[in-house]
Length: 171
Image (cartoon, rainbow, N blue to C red; front, side):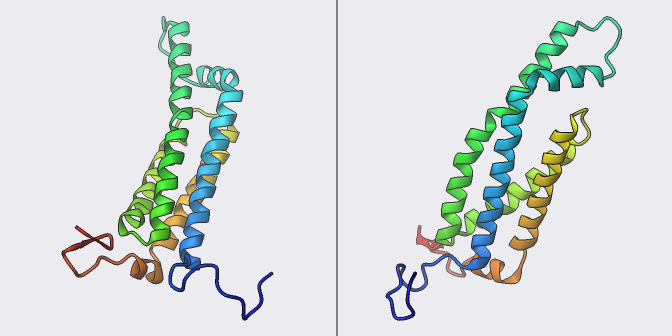
């Protein structure tokens, strides 16, 4: 516990503002939901593939083994990117803490992509729990867009008027 007269642990002006911390928390929540979904899809992969096969309109004479293999590989294509996304999220969070405009733009981009991808997954035959996690991810992404569009956040990451500076560093 700190006392009012205790020295600050961070120099003035370097602490992450509360509105940026909220964005970081939502990004971590989105990442946690992605990891949860990937883990559930890995654990229940066979049940998910069976459900998708049962709910797809397959043409007569379709090779079920090939269709099953395609669905298995598509499940892995959803699981593996989570590790790569987590590294990218950590880089964006670091940029947000440093006040880099590029990181702010990446948050907007990520939010829009998550909303679009979630919309696409909701049109596929998936189990209820996949839909529930995707709806939660969409809500987090929408909240990220709302927070990022607030005036104080836009001002913090406003473009510099000096052409010789890029993200606060000389070019």
